[in-house]
Amino acid sequence: MATNNVASSVKFNDLCKVFETICKAKKRDKDSVLVDFIKTYKTQAEHLKATSPNCSTSFYPVLRLILPQVERERGPYGLKEFTLAKRLIKILCLPPEGTEATRLTNSRTSGAQNKDFADAAYWVLRKYFLVDSKLSISDVNEYLDRIAENHGNNDPRGADDQLYKLFQETSAEEQKWLIRIILKDLHLGMGQDRILRLYHPDAADLFSSNNDLCKICETLTDPSVRLHEIEIAIFVPFRPMLSQRCDVVQFNKVFSGNVKMYVETKFDGERFQLHMENGQFKYFSKNGYDYTSTYGSDFTNGIFTPLLKNSFKKDVWKIILDGEMMGWNKSTKKFGSKAMNFDVKHTKTSHVHQPCLCVFDILLLNDDVLTNRPLKDRLLLLDTVLNPVQGTIMISHRKEITSKSAVLDALNASMDREEEGIVFKDVMSLYKPNNRYAGWWKMKLEYFENVMSDLDVIVMGGYYGEGRHRNQIAGFLVAVKDSSTDNEHYISFARIASGLSNEELQTIENNLGPHWKKLNEGDPEEHGLEWGKEKPDLWIPPNKSCVLQVRASELMRSSDFKTEWTLRFPRIQKIRLDKHYNDCLTLTELLELINSAKYV
Ligand code: ATP
Image (cartoon, rainbow, N blue to C red; front, top):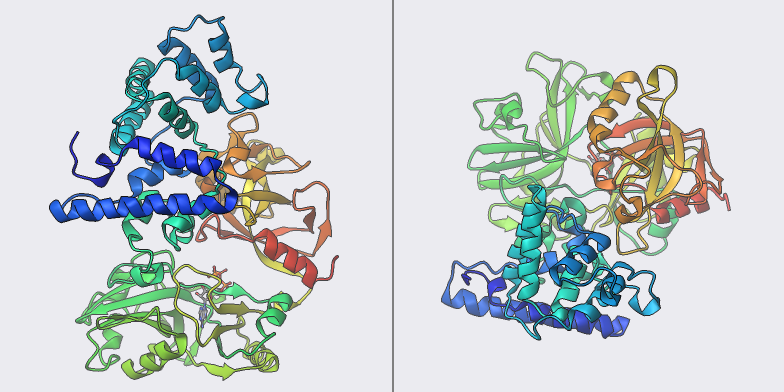
């Protein structure tokens, strides 16, 4: 087969040897085995690149075999343990009642030694197949593609045929690993995040936001170049840096040592990024939607860009700014708030509110990406490049503080001004896109009160309503994320009778409707879901689900939910379709809330 990529020149057998060594290695020695393999692969890639510059050097063909459970590009194979056992019996023409066939079909029940189906199969297969093979990583991926394709085309014979050919070309040892790849569990004793981090320190973070192994290999090619440097490019939207919620516990933690922070207003508008190159503009919302046609691609069009004519200093030809788009009331000369029923993304020139960008960060200036510089240096630069104009483009006012009392004073002052709260930022923080734990905090008065509000939980299950909502999901079993394991894991936390309007229920139906599953359909655990005594009528895989922002009167103990805590009188505040499904409350954060409220 053609060798226009590295994966064609690396033998599948070499990967199987790595799997074997990892399996046998002690927990602490496993990492180095994989790291060595990745290094060898990359060296091979460099050599190949030297002779054929257009070849593909991506690690993706390998990574999708190491993490088959999260591989999304290939469709299902339609092969579970039992069906695979049947196919093998057919391929090997084994007598159906013979010991070997029984060993395959009863692998789970025939003693502890044979607990793993792949192992059981190995002992049968090794008598029938080659000792070694020549198949490359690419060849194996192509076979697996064809098996999945045939299954997708309802062609079981075609799938069998490919499986048979694949087995004819491989050794029993390799077949054991192929079976594990097909069954999507390698039993390596290493979690997904750990494996991803060995590939690149930012791979696990990137995967949590895009779920795309291929993109990870394309984006993160050099472990010494960090994600926050790569993600910033002119006219390409990025996910902005986020703030961690600061309640009593966080507050005491953050201010336990020497700190220097900037305190800023927490603007109640819409997060926007402005990109400009040589007078051409683009605007992106927090989720990467392009609003350039509304705001204007140059000084001659749109409701906003024409107002910026003299806002940039002469020597600025390329810039990316991060900030909050607010509505500025032209007659009162004050900011409006979201509650005032206008949408800053759709205002008109005739409207009393005009868009005003409150800039709080700068990420690119001319040819320099600034994300790797501390906030204080970025902001010094910001001060030199803009000519702020009241009501159009303003730099967020910042105050440097070093003590707890100064933050509390700032919060009180913001309450007096009837603002939402404050944001405070470590002056040394680097800019990390899509990261909530990199030195920015948001603080609202209600985080300090005994009311639980703004809790972002993920829907794991649904309950049918009553009366006219009989056939509709009208209540939800919600979960928090247990981050203590490497794999995604969500545990049940509360049952919420919706409190949503018909329109809002319809919104949920439109988004989640096609993905609800009956309890006997599929395996919730395979999707990382775990509930306790309280079971839903239907369940939903996390990546098809959504986040709900809820409030409740308090937390209370409960043996019905896996967290062993639940909410009293929970209500849904908002459906958060703008949030990524795994950007929800974690178990650690919940336990901190419980501690802070002194419930224990
Ligand atoms: P998040 O954006 O943190 O997921 P959210 O959408 O629930 O949370 P809030 O918790 O109300 O919103 O506030 C966080 C948001 O505050 C940020 O996304 C950002 O848009 C906004 N924000 C307002 N003022 C600032 C500021 N001065 N610095 C940074 N972010 C700010």
